[in-house]
Image 1: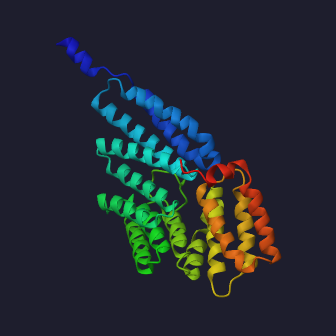
Image 2: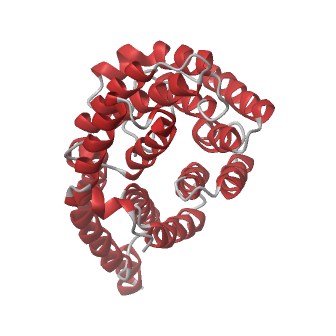
Image 3: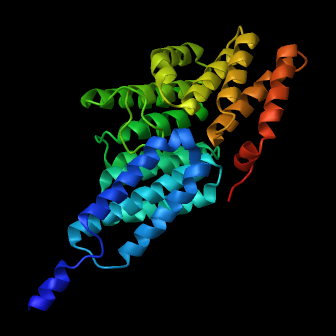
Amino acid sequence: MLLQLHELQDSNIGDGQLRLLEDQVHRIIAEYEQRGPSELGPPTARLRRQVHQLLSGRQLLRTRCQLHRVAAQLAGLLGYMAINTGRFRLASAYCAEALHLATEIEDIDLQVWVWGTRSLGAYYQADYARAHADAARGHALAPNSPQSIRLLANGEARALGQLGDRAGADAAVERALALLDRYDIDPELTPCISFEPYGYARVAANAATAYVPLGDTPRVLHYTGDIDPAVEHADSDWSRALVRLDIATAVLRQQDADLEQALALGREALRVCADQPIRSVWQRATTLHGLTQRWANEPQVLEFTDQLRIWRDRPEVQAISGSTG
């Protein structure tokens, strides 16, 4: 009996080692926007393999549940990184793993987060119907969870904007803001890859993106103006680049297009993201360039086209521009 009790209490991982693994997950999130997926992807993958090796051993139920959560988070982070680098098949595999692990431990909030990341992957493959469906499926799991704020703003509103559904986008943004009002969430800009719920800065940035394809420049400028201080003070070059590209695209789509302002913002976005490009910046810069072709022979357009070509020729950008693996 004593031997059996000892076996039941046996574990191949202690509390200290588990806390170290959790700390490493937090560090990856905190450093992601400075170091990027190319640098952080390999150590995150190694950490995932280490956790899977531990899971093949024996743990107490409480410890095993926590280890499953770490494994699910690492798979989710790798899925998000794969989206940022345009490796969508790999992203899908990692998200499937993360969803399985989160479901095994009945972690609803983590499941919702994974559905949001799946939606993000569909969005950047221009499959907007699937992006909306994935976000809606995650939202249905926990409609009142603070995690659903992300699904409404980043998933549903942006996809519906691309699909031309103004009423749907309006409703999704309004529901995200109403849900945000229920919770005491820091309004500042959190890391894009964070498991924390969206605060106002993230909601507003995504609302602005939703209204760009709808041609609603006043709404775009309203939301980007709201968050300008938060974006400029955050340690997030990607957010600065994406907001600039949203504004640039919006002012080109309005009736009295401001070519000079748009391309100044476009050039600044490329400069900001020169060393750590991600798929979303590449996609929005490409969209902006397509809109400039009405003025193809203008000096500002020629300058931007040349800068974009040089930017695209960088190995870091080529790595994210055409891969679907």
